[in-house]
Length: 252
Image 1 (cartoon, rainbow, N blue to C red):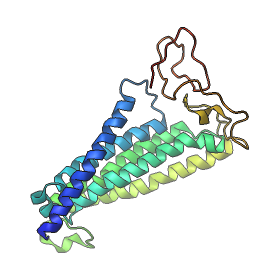
Image 2 (cartoon, rainbow, N blue to C red):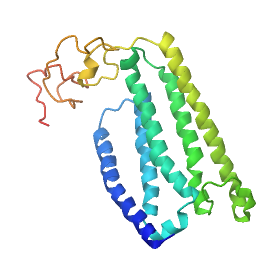
Image 3 (tube, rainbow, N blue to C red):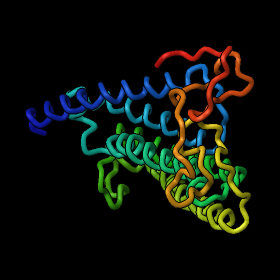
Image 4 (cartoon, helix red, strand yellow):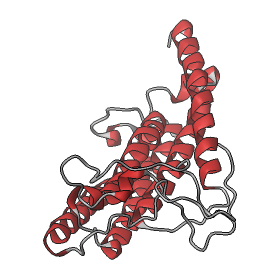
């Protein structure tokens, strides 16, 4: 690889790492000491952060030019990009779908099926892409049709087969979500206005919202982050509810 191009890869990777690390600390700080409910949506959200961190850590290796000269154009890059983009996007996408489905369609997705889908997705995803780190370090190049024609790659074939099993399982796991959507749209329990105990205004309207969204213009009394407020009997305080006089809210 041309050294100028390698230096460009190194600098761009370091530039990407700074805002990415800030966002990770932002996410972790948001849930720190929170009263977390491990719904299917939250499980996918936590998996998104976890997979993004693993992908980010492998990206640090590529910021080092001497290391990047060896691992560039190998399966190590494939593992890194899938943990950051595919692991990040697919986990966040499923989390968002489970979170917003009640508000969009007025029905709750089945949580038991959702948990099974989450655990299988998490397991098969890591089974598919984590071994690719070792494949890349072993010298397996990207976009290769048959690695067995190279003698030095034959010993890596078991890892390649594990990744294949993980990829196939990950694909079939998606059918669980499709099945969940079908049965929930037909027979799922009707969603209340605020099934997740959220504070923001969209969870004060019926699920799904009617024409014009709000039946009447809401009155906002405070910010959207009033969770676990000392002195309140419940864990959340919607923006449209005024806090009791004996409760003091922090200024944001």
